[in-house]
Image 1 (cartoon, helix red, strand yellow):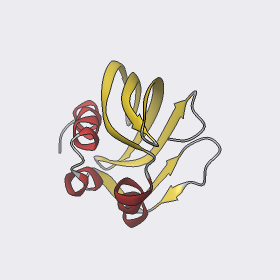
Image 2 (cartoon, helix red, strand yellow):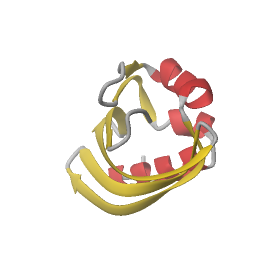
Image 3 (cartoon, one colour):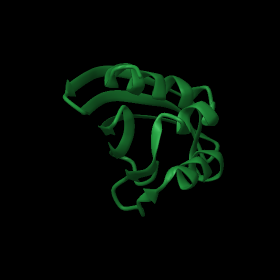
Image 4 (tube, one colour):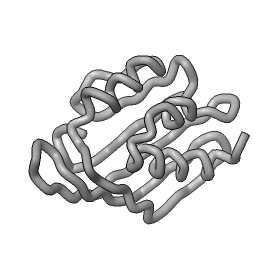
Length: 116
Protein backbone atom coordinates (compact mmCIF):
# COMPACT_ATOMS: atom_id res chain seq x y z
CA UNK A 1 0.00 0.00 0.00
CA UNK A 2 1.09 3.59 -0.59
CA UNK A 3 2.68 5.72 2.10
CA UNK A 4 0.33 7.72 4.38
CA UNK A 5 1.04 11.07 2.69
CA UNK A 6 0.14 9.67 -0.73
CA UNK A 7 -3.05 8.14 0.65
CA UNK A 8 -4.11 11.44 2.21
CA UNK A 9 -3.36 13.42 -0.95
CA UNK A 10 -5.38 10.84 -2.90
CA UNK A 11 -8.26 11.30 -0.45
CA UNK A 12 -8.65 14.98 -1.40
CA UNK A 13 -8.51 14.15 -5.11
CA UNK A 14 -11.24 11.53 -4.69
CA UNK A 15 -13.55 13.65 -2.57
CA UNK A 16 -13.30 16.51 -5.08
CA UNK A 17 -14.03 14.08 -7.93
CA UNK A 18 -16.97 12.62 -5.92
CA UNK A 19 -15.46 9.16 -6.44
CA UNK A 20 -16.85 7.64 -3.26
CA UNK A 21 -16.15 3.99 -4.10
CA UNK A 22 -12.41 4.56 -4.22
CA UNK A 23 -12.59 7.12 -1.40
CA UNK A 24 -14.15 4.80 1.20
CA UNK A 25 -11.64 2.10 0.22
CA UNK A 26 -8.92 4.31 1.77
CA UNK A 27 -10.49 3.80 5.22
CA UNK A 28 -10.66 0.91 7.67
CA UNK A 29 -14.01 -0.85 8.10
CA UNK A 30 -14.37 0.67 11.58
CA UNK A 31 -13.25 4.20 10.69
CA UNK A 32 -14.24 7.06 12.97
CA UNK A 33 -14.61 10.58 11.52
CA UNK A 34 -15.03 13.41 14.01
CA UNK A 35 -16.04 17.03 13.35
CA UNK A 36 -16.53 19.55 16.18
CA UNK A 37 -20.14 20.02 17.25
CA UNK A 38 -21.41 17.05 15.23
CA UNK A 39 -21.88 13.36 15.89
CA UNK A 40 -18.97 11.15 14.92
CA UNK A 41 -19.36 9.09 11.77
CA UNK A 42 -18.59 5.49 12.66
CA UNK A 43 -17.81 2.79 10.11
CA UNK A 44 -17.19 2.66 6.40
CA UNK A 45 -20.90 2.29 5.49
CA UNK A 46 -21.83 5.40 7.48
CA UNK A 47 -18.92 7.26 5.90
CA UNK A 48 -20.19 6.38 2.41
CA UNK A 49 -23.71 7.52 3.35
CA UNK A 50 -22.31 10.81 4.66
CA UNK A 51 -20.44 11.54 1.42
CA UNK A 52 -23.34 10.47 -0.80
CA UNK A 53 -26.23 12.00 1.15
CA UNK A 54 -25.22 14.05 4.18
CA UNK A 55 -22.23 16.17 3.29
CA UNK A 56 -23.36 19.82 3.19
CA UNK A 57 -20.55 20.84 0.80
CA UNK A 58 -20.52 20.22 -2.94
CA UNK A 59 -19.10 21.38 -6.25
CA UNK A 60 -15.83 22.20 -4.57
CA UNK A 61 -12.15 21.60 -4.43
CA UNK A 62 -9.51 21.30 -1.76
CA UNK A 63 -6.13 22.96 -1.97
CA UNK A 64 -3.53 21.33 0.26
CA UNK A 65 -1.05 23.85 1.66
CA UNK A 66 0.93 21.78 4.17
CA UNK A 67 1.27 18.09 4.98
CA UNK A 68 3.08 16.87 8.09
CA UNK A 69 3.72 13.18 8.62
CA UNK A 70 4.64 11.65 11.97
CA UNK A 71 4.61 7.87 11.72
CA UNK A 72 0.99 6.80 11.24
CA UNK A 73 -0.43 10.31 11.67
CA UNK A 74 -0.80 12.85 8.86
CA UNK A 75 -1.80 16.47 9.53
CA UNK A 76 -3.02 18.64 6.66
CA UNK A 77 -3.64 22.37 6.42
CA UNK A 78 -5.51 23.60 3.40
CA UNK A 79 -8.41 25.53 1.97
CA UNK A 80 -11.73 24.58 0.43
CA UNK A 81 -13.72 26.46 -2.17
CA UNK A 82 -17.16 25.29 -3.25
CA UNK A 83 -20.86 25.48 -2.49
CA UNK A 84 -22.88 24.98 0.67
CA UNK A 85 -26.66 25.25 0.57
CA UNK A 86 -26.43 26.74 -2.90
CA UNK A 87 -24.06 29.55 -1.90
CA UNK A 88 -20.37 29.92 -2.60
CA UNK A 89 -18.13 29.25 0.40
CA UNK A 90 -14.41 29.33 0.96
CA UNK A 91 -12.58 28.51 4.16
CA UNK A 92 -9.45 27.05 5.68
CA UNK A 93 -9.30 23.64 7.30
CA UNK A 94 -7.00 21.42 9.31
CA UNK A 95 -7.40 17.65 9.14
CA UNK A 96 -5.71 14.89 11.07
CA UNK A 97 -5.67 11.38 9.61
CA UNK A 98 -4.56 8.46 11.78
CA UNK A 99 -3.59 5.24 10.03
CA UNK A 100 -3.87 1.60 10.99
CA UNK A 101 -2.25 -1.02 8.76
CA UNK A 102 -2.04 1.34 5.78
CA UNK A 103 -5.63 2.64 5.87
CA UNK A 104 -7.18 5.71 7.52
CA UNK A 105 -8.70 4.59 10.83
CA UNK A 106 -9.55 7.97 12.36
CA UNK A 107 -10.08 11.35 10.80
CA UNK A 108 -10.63 14.71 12.48
CA UNK A 109 -11.64 17.93 10.68
CA UNK A 110 -11.35 21.44 12.08
CA UNK A 111 -12.70 24.58 10.36
CA UNK A 112 -14.18 27.92 11.33
CA UNK A 113 -17.57 26.80 9.95
CA UNK A 114 -20.40 25.32 11.99
CA UNK A 115 -20.97 22.39 9.66
CA UNK A 116 -18.87 20.56 7.08
